[in-house]
Every structure is written in C-alpha cells, then in structure tokens.
Image 1: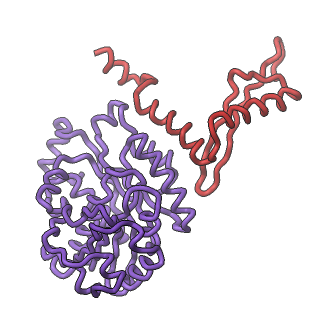
Image 2: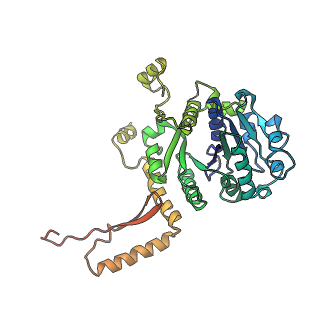
Image 3: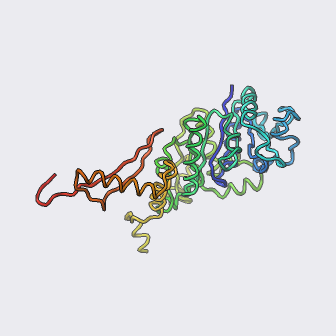
Length: 267
Length: 88
C-alpha cells in the first residue's frame, strides 16, 4: 500500500507545482513507482512543468466521471523507466467537477498500484484545497521566506489540522543565503519557530528552475542544479533516509566554498 | 559602508526582524480570530484587574501569543513598579 502526499501552501506562486514535479521525479529516480495528480482543475500546469503537455488525452475529471479508465488516462514519463506517471487536471472544468469523497476513492485506488501518490494542490483554501487533501495520508507545506507566504502557510497548517491531517512538514523554498546573511531574509530557524512544524527540506533560490521549467525537464535530472540536489535530498528523506539539510552558502561562497566545490564535497 | 558595519554588528532593524515582528502580530490575530481592537480591550481589562492588587507599569505591559504544538497560549508580561527604597 503506497503513501499519498499532498503538496500545499495556501498562497500561489511559491513553488507547489515545481516541488511536486521534482519530488516525484526524485522518488522515481530512486526506483519507486510514483503517480502525480494535478488537482488544480481549470488551471492545469503540472503537465507543462513536467514537459508532458503534448501527451494528454484524458484527465482527472474523465477518470472520476468514469469516461476513461485510470490506466488509460495516466501519462507515462518515459525518462523514468516505468516509474513515473501523471494524471493531469481538466482544463475546461472547475473545482466543483469533483468532490472530496471522489478524490478519496481515486487516491485510495491509486495507492494500491503506486509506492507514492503526490497530489499538487491548487492555491487557496476553498473546495480545490479540500479535494486535494481529502485522500492524503500526509501533507507537505511549501513556503518562501516572505511574510505573505508564511502567513498563508500558517493558515493552511490550521486548516489541515481541522481536516484531521496531522503533522504536516515544511519545505522552505527559494531561500537566498546572501540575503539571510545580511539579515534581510528570514532563515530556516525563523520559519520553523514561527510555524511550529517539522522541516522536510530547504530549497535554495536557483535560476536553473526557470531553465528547467522552460524545457519541461525536472531539475532533479540536472546534477549541477542546487535546487535539483535539494529536491533529491527531500525525496530520500521521504524514503526514510537521514540526510542533513544542505549547507547554504552564498554562490561562489568565497575561496573555501569554491575549494569545496572543486573537491566535490556535498553541499 | 556604515550600513554594512551596522549590520555586521547586529543592528536591530535588519528587515527580517521587522518581518518576524509583524508576522508575530498578524498570526496572533489570525490564529485567535481576535481583532487588534479586541486585543487592546483585553489588555486594558487585564491592566484594570491587576492594578487592583499590584502597582504595575502599564507602559511596559505586553500581551503576546505563543504556540506549542497543538495548543496556543496568551503570555502577558507585566512589570511591577518598584517602590522607592525597597526591593521586591
């Protein structure tokens, strides 16, 4: 029986979809069988981030309404052997097209066939959120070190509790070590202290994410990307490995940083 | 240059400290569903009640909020005025 994880945040634009794609790809790389569900009905995006947009025939709503079998609707990502699949959102419908009970049934049936089912939650706290969390066993909250994002993350943590989804964990996204160093950005400890939840991972701000999204290739496939490395670490933590949080240095972090890179030391 | 110097030596108004302080307040209201006005009323009532028993410094009086795992708590910091020539 697999595990269903919802990736949520409250606020839009903090990196839920990128996080879902990369954790999914990271788990698939590690040999796990993974399905990604885009629960953002009407604003489909996980398909383009993954580079699978040209292969969509059926979507989530088709499956829920019985117009397509799950097996037929799932798109196989050929870059990951037989390990990574996407169930895209419908683009011409809205959040009311499915109910939380239907989502729960769908996710439960998928957990029989996959090691992990990752659900990309839409922004907001309305029905789209309720649908996305309904079938999940655990929740991951993505937040960037900005007041608006932290405030919404706090609200989402409260709502997850109300939905009886206990112990969510936090991914701090787009942290900029140089700003943290200057005292102009909240650091990881500030965020954990304010939100009072466990840390799952830290992803540094990385221009390569834009490149990877442009190309439709998850950053975990790139061994040079710091964000890619952070996502691979998160995937391994989800598999139960004890991986320390990567050390955040400034880019080209002085002579020692460069030396360490040359020696191939792991960040 | 002064800017850098001041920051290295932990100047108070590094913008993340401002962010944290603002978040602390806004999350207090969000979590407790208590408006700033209501909180002010609560604070004034607390001052009134405690003043009947102790001579307190209402300038330094602070009501704050903390969260531990699932529960939340109101934390009030109430400085007591020191009487001249006597220690408490």
